[in-house]
Image 1 (spheres, one colour):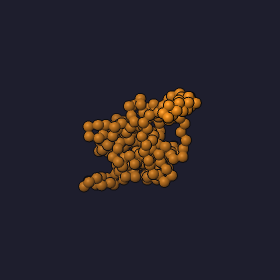
Image 2 (cartoon, one colour):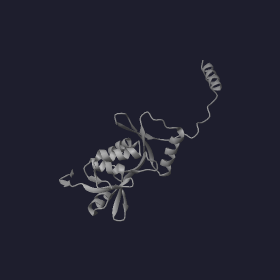
Image 3 (cartoon, rainbow, N blue to C red):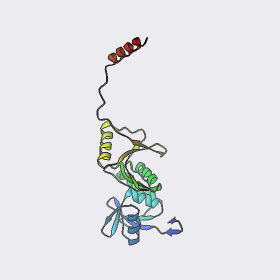
Image 4 (cartoon, rainbow, N blue to C red):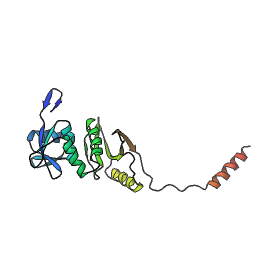
Length: 200
């Protein structure tokens, strides 16, 4: 259970199936949807394994599998890791964002999150791309990320996770599709020498 101010909330119950966790109690659906978790399906709410793992870690959710066996946080992480080798890295970034009271939604790519950050009268919209330190990204991949960010009217942010799990966030200002043609270095040198000679 988790304490929220003076309120101690009992953990909600969810059922694992088909690669996601379904929660159907009226109170749970209301509580989770108000906080930006999951997708509504009729009277229930469907959580990704990432969301379910985070909620289980916070003590807000208890999960059982299709046979009725209760699953702890480590079991959910293990199941997620079997489906996605980057599950732990993604969970690290997702948890960090949630702990900052930011709502992170799944992006087009599994390693991307969509984030709307409301500050006073303004809303900052971000596309956050998770990158494990030392991994390689081609320029084409990078350009695709930036294009998706532009098309969704979002600012691209790269979240780099190091080996210790420390996360660093970097905003991307822009990508040049083609570099301007370089000026002839010999002509530049001649012009420079001519100016220096005139100044003597």
